[in-house]
Image 1 (spheres, rainbow, N blue to C red):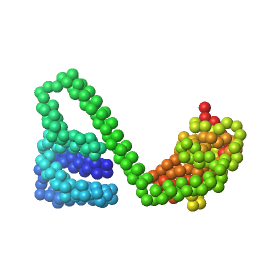
Image 2: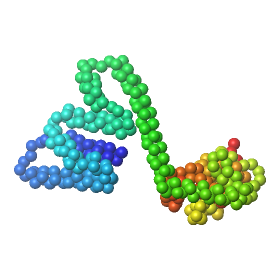
Image 3: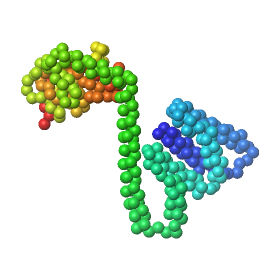
Image 4: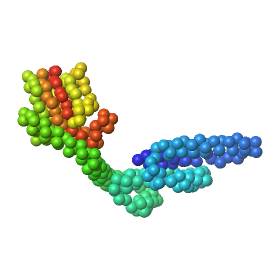
Length: 304
C-alpha cells in the first residue's frame, strides 16, 4: 500500500509541475534565475521523495520499485512537450486506471490490461454516446466491481487467516499454549471446584455475589489483577473501572457476564480466548498466552 501511495504522489507531483509550466521565451538576463529555479525545484522535490522512499519503504518494496525505474518514468514525463495537453491528460488518466488495476491484482483479482486499454480506447473513440449506452455500461461494471470487491475481501481474509495460523504455529505460541494447558490442568487437579466451560474458559468462584448477573449486554464496575502463568502481573486496577463483556477479550467477557454484585472470581483464560496469536506485546503478553485474572465486581448494571 505504501508504494501505491508513493507512486501516486510522484505522479501527481510530476504532472502538477509539467502541466503548469508552459514554455515561454526568456531573455539572457533571466538565464541565471531560470537555472536556479529549475535546479532547486528539482532538488527540493527530489529530496522530499528520497526522504519518503528511504524511510517509508521496506527492502522488499524497494526491490520492486527501484530508484532507476522511478527516474526513468520521471524523465519521460518531465521531458514531454508541455504543450501536448492531450498526452499529459492521457498520462494522468492512465495512472488512475493503473492504480485501480494494481489494487485488483494485489488482491488476487486477475485483470487483462490489454483488454482494459482496448475497451477504453474503443469506447473513447466513439463519435457519440447515448445515455442508455452509458447507463447500461456503468450498471454492468458496478455489478462486476461489487463481485471483484467481494473477491478482494475474501482474498485479504484468507491472507489474514493464514497469517494468524502461522503465528499460532510458531514455536513461541506453541510453547505458551502448552504452558497454559498445563497450568489449568494442574489447577483443576488441585481444586476440583474449578469449572471449565464449553469454550475452554476455566474459573473459580471465591464469592458468588448477590442480585442479577451482568449478562452479555450489561456492564460492571470491577477491580482486577491480570497476570501470566508464571506470575508476572501485566495489568491491575484496585480503584474500580467499568467494563462491558462485549468490550473485553472473549474469555474475560464470558466470565464477567456470569458475575453479580459482590462476586469474586478467578478467571483462567486460554490464549484463543485472550489475545490469540497476536498477543499484546506492549503489555508483555506473548502469542497464545494464557491469562489469569483475579476479578471482583463492586457494582452491576444488568443488560436489558
